[in-house]
Amino acid sequence: MTRELRMGNLKMGLDLDLDLKRFRYARAETDVLQDIKINIRPGTVTAISGDSGSGKSTLGAILGGILPRTGLDQFEGAITVGGKHIAFSENESPRIDPSGWAQHIAFLPQDANDYLSGIRETVAEEMAFSLENRGVPRKDILTRIRAVADMLDIKHLLAQYAGTLSGGQTRIVALGALMVDNPQVLVLDEPLAGLDKNAQNMVLSAIQQLKLLGKAIVVITRNYVHGADLVDEVLKLEDGELSRFERKSLPSNQESNLDKKPAQLTGRNCSRVLLEFAGTNLGYQPSAPQIVSGFNLKIHAGECVALLGPNGIGKTTILKAAAGLLKPTTGKIRTSTFPGLLLQNPNDQLIERTVFKEVGYGLRPGTESRRQVAEVLDRLDLRGKAEMHPYELSISERKLVALASVLVHEPEILLLDEPTEGLDENAIGVLREILDVCTSKGHGVLFTSHDDSFVAHAANRTVQLNAVENAR
Ligand SMILES: Nc1ncnc2c1ncn2[C@@H]1O[C@H](COP(=O)(O)OP(=O)(O)OP(=O)(O)O)[C@@H](O)[C@H]1O
Ligand SMILES: [Mg+2]
Image 1 (cartoon, rainbow, N blue to C red):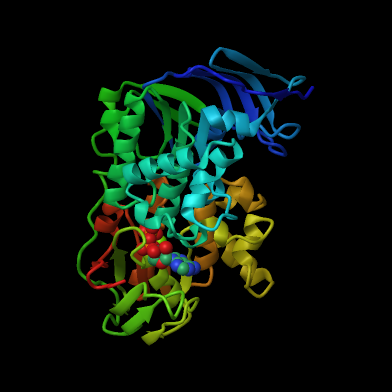
Image 2 (cartoon, rainbow, N blue to C red):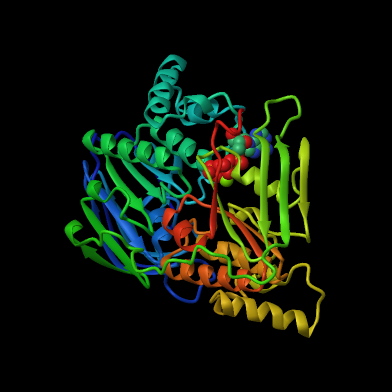
């Protein structure tokens, strides 16, 4: 039976309880989550952690009212929110009124683009969207937008079109749009991923303030070390089941056992230049100020170089230009061969209906290409996913599929945009091995990252972009 639930006016300071017996996606053969009980209380921060594919984002989407999709997914259990009990069973699948739900319980998806409408002219208009729909007076909307933009340090982005934001800017703007709505419960999936240090601190201090205001906050994260002192309880998901940890038992540094990469080049023929930027200017509109000015860089055979800098400085822009997706306005870009590019958001890179077809896209059909695809899927531990639709995978698994589709062509120059974003420690270890193999073959790697630990262990050299070099 399907019935629509209206949330109506609920009191301030909401309790949210989930008693989940089982959840299974439509068309799936096994349950993703079983026997999970969670109690979210006002004025607390709950972290939900777990490896890639453990079900974190699914759990977040259930708390966020996005799942189950009525008539498709199987969900048995109950959600109690502000005293309202909503039971789900094989025979009863109430349809949650999404806008009513979102007024009280807001959900920031792991792909923050999904939170923004994409149809508003500016960031400010995006942030105004839900309050406008609820008929809040314009003056009050503007006051709220200004307060949130101040809190997150995004005032400089308010007049920009949201479709042209960088990866990190998109996430913080989506969080701002969500906060403008003033929900009682905030479920945030990887809210710090892809953010520079300043933006991370802004988000952590916003979470601190929201907690003091009595909001209930759920943070879904693979790395709960950042902001650990804000967290009241950590729930760890393993194979769809939950265990609880006291905050004091958290590891102080999850990544401390990684080996250091030697700082010297080991590749053969390492004086050969594979990629060169010479006095390169890059921008999206010739008449507007350039995003990157006078950029110089050489990547030699066997080198793994990290391109660093704050959100919106132009790192993705440089990688896109190296891959030939953006022409320099002035200056030169020279490449020895056609580079392979892993985009920051894997959703922008996946077009086929199965993982196997996706990875084999562009290869000449035949036994040899099937062997190549199978081999790269093995290397990335994706063999079991070969017949799945890429959109049935978690974002981290999609990222690995996108990486596989690049690696299968064995590019001599590998361009990776935030390759560790959303990956768990296992997958990061696999990625490091892949980079080592590439450089030992004399290939060159240029990657962007906000993940200091990965940079320290994977890069031979770092290049720092800053606003002074790139007068904008
Ligand atoms: N298609 C576009 N049109 C106009 N401006 C754009 C476009 N894409 C990006 N920009 C702007 O260019 C600047 C650089 O963006 P870019 O994506 O290169 O940043 P980034 O350094 O990769 O940031 P992040 O760390 O957040 O990924 C940003 O200010 C962004 O708003
Ligand atoms: Mg970027």
